Image (cartoon, rainbow, N blue to C red; front, top):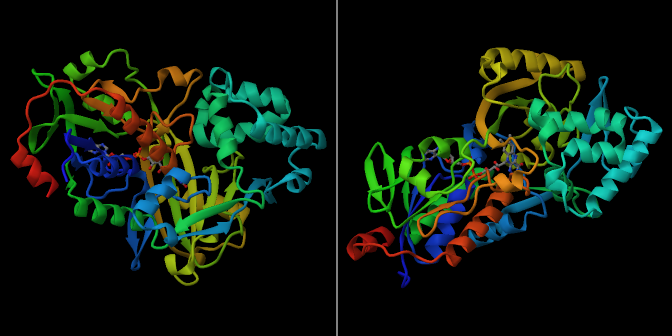
Length: 453
Ligand SMILES: Cc1cc2nc3c(=O)[nH]c(=O)nc-3n(C[C@H](O)[C@H](O)[C@H](O)COP(=O)(O)OP(=O)(O)OC[C@H]3O[C@@H](n4cnc5c(N)ncnc54)[C@H](O)[C@@H]3O)c2cc1C
């Protein structure tokens, strides 16, 4: 069915943001073309084949509080395929592992003095009830330092922040941390995480089938080189297949990529936008092991002797049917900027050094325990946040009636995640609905019929 105000809309980028935008815009009756650079949809939730199954290149799970994402899964008929399991967190300190999942664990947490434990506990409890007012204007270091005290901040919170932001941790606004506190607080009975039968590829495959059935045009392997406005101020998208005009364009690219492809006319029409929002990258080293390491989903390794910041044992969450019998799946993760020399370290060296560091913590772990190893890098994961980011956050409407944004640079203060991207997509859809459609050329009905057939 074609809506009375049906428009031709290009959605650029096929991660969860682009998939969600394409789905909802098509439901509104628009002729939607989704353009993705790679041969795979799913963006950072991307996957690879291994021994007849698929695995995420970067560990992924859901939380019970991911309501908007779960709504999308319901639209796709996948709700019953999601399973939930209790999950736990631990902290490695001087080659010992300390579980850290509640007040009792904190009381026994040796890395901190007794007073520091009490202050961290009070910070945790306060962080969940505190108002977020003014927190964008204050750094996390200032906020947590005040609440927990300088020494507990240095020993406990700073390594966690460094794990995520590297040496840029000191700039991150307290609002980011407040949101994270609240996203991960979990259920009253303890923390629970969710995964989907068949892995995240299942979600992407179902999206693809659904979008195709509904008549969305999917263009894979089509990197967008430039997004601009032509001489009639119509949005144009340029790829190696040529130039195409649309009524509207929705950009879902990581910000540095969009900034590179935004043409002159578009920039001129965009008003005051911060085109220089920088992004953090990540390296994940995935081991398929023949034995488990711990019972914890996440083990923080903040001491400088570790070349990675955390050990994520996703097989504590995933069913054997999703990973293989007696196969244990462990990701070692390091967030760092793409210009950091370590980002270019050869795979061989990462595999060797990181495994040696893992053995420091698990001395009985041997090479024979490794079934396989894979290394993945993502240069653009999320913005490097700075104080007052709310004022720098790009708007949903870039050029009224024509160019819109639903990118990971806008998800803040929500945590960047599939759920955060779905929330952002909803904000963008609301902004589009409220944005008056400018005068535009008649769109060829024939072409439109074809696109939505
Ligand atoms: C290590 C790691 C762990 C994570 N863990 C979780 C988790 O447990 N749970 C969770 O919910 N989230 C997690 N996330 C975050 C989540 O993956 C992202 O927040 C989310 O995928 C962002 O989606 P997006 O669509 O906005 O952007 P992206 O996923 O970055 O998608 C952008 C898309 O644009 C495409 N593109 C880029 N350039 C062009 C171009 N020129 N032309 C056309 N297309 C282009 C890309 O190929 C990509 O498909 C994790 C991320 C990482 C890196």
